Picture 1 (cartoon, rainbow, N blue to C red):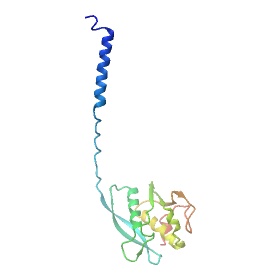
Picture 2 (picture 1 turned 90 degrees about the horizontal axis):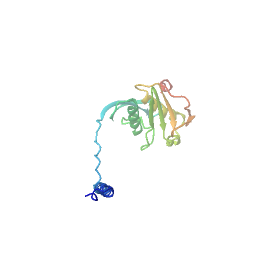
Picture 3 (picture 1 turned 60 degrees about the vertical axis):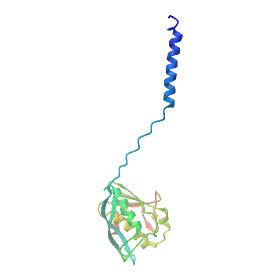
Picture 4 (picture 1 turned 90 degrees about the vertical axis):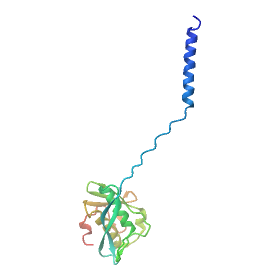
Length: 180
């Protein structure tokens, strides 16, 4: 009996048991991860006031539109308003300011300040001073309709000194577009 429980036999039996356990673990199929829970956020209808130009590019033409958003925070509402702005007016007598299919500008909100990143294609529109001012003023008035102090314009993510024929080093306020 003394040879049955020798140190060598005990260590060998323990190693055999460990190998059998490891073999079973390796042969077991991997656990299928649980799929993530799909949580659909309910979209709410919110009315926003969007500005376009009249046909003579002299005055602003407001239009109230309904947008669907999942959150009613300033950033989401601002981006939804600019998406509607880029899609163009629905009312007759109002003028679209960017060609159909043109991407909407991106917008960020920091406190009461809006930062609008215009796509590089907007620089190539060549509208002249009046058209450039109308484009920037319709954006500024759309964003500053309910809240905010000013709008800073960037082009393709970069600070620029001019947009077309206009100086955009300083942010636009409601007063900058009051005469439109």
